[in-house]
Amino acid sequence: MASTASFLATLASSTATASLSATPVSGGSSKVRFLPATAQRRRAVVLRAAVSGAEKEKAKPSESGDKGGKDARVVQVHSAEELDSALQAAKNRLVVVEFAASHSVNSSRIYPCMVELSRTCGDVDFLLVMGDESDATRELCQREGITQVPHFSFYKGTEKVHEEEGIGPDQLAGDVLYYGDNHAAVVQLHNRADVEALMAENSGEDGKLLVLDVGLKHCGPCVKVYPTVVKLSRTMADTAVFARMNGDENDACMEFLKDMEVVEVPTFLFIRDNKIVGRYVGSGKGELIGEILRYQGVRVTY
Image (cartoon, rainbow, N blue to C red):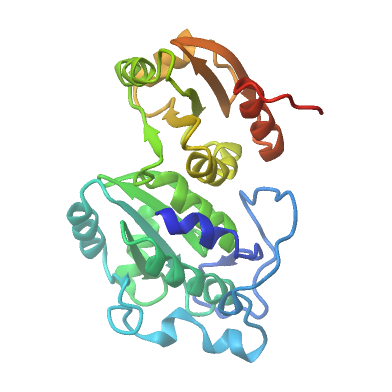
């Protein structure tokens, strides 16, 4: 997952949704749902994600055949039974499922980005479902409540933890980074005992500033800022420790949020010597860096 953050920076954000109807459509649908605003338009440097005209038609997932061959890290499933089996085999690994359709230009546009992510993120399983392939896949889409494609569902331990429609490559990569677990530089906390143990480890004269990122699983701004948290956890490793807690992961986490009087997310708690010395509420990269530096004793002028 470490390389996902760098890959994220190279992606462009541009896609929409298309109907799952078996009737072909031209030019794709203009309907976009759950599409988060982006701070700025990134350069489209991944050419495979910026195909146009006839090239888009050639890039349709359905024309590539079963993904167990050419795109070995993206596995195509053909029924509910195959999906359930794959989810059970993944255990606690993150599983990303793209629901696509052969007529959808937007499915073709986003699919190469998923292939690229599958090569970068070895700790994540990637699956593809062609919704109009057969009665079995149509029944699967109906079971999962899929009405628009491309549609991405994120599973852990057979449980659906997140889903998105109408997203671009950068949002897809950000979601994969956020919902995955293997971020060695960011400590994952699951209850109050985890927090207290980490505080104890970083107390005293040689203790580091503890930056605790508190969010929710389905929080757009939390997902948006997380790649920055991952990068800062590496660049500031000598002076700060970064940790994350999702308040809606379990009752213990939610109780901790209430005790810490967290009412908005994302909230960053700055902890030194077992005491909360400050907090920042928001997802601004510059503001977050400024606050971290301030609590490290660096004079910051706004």
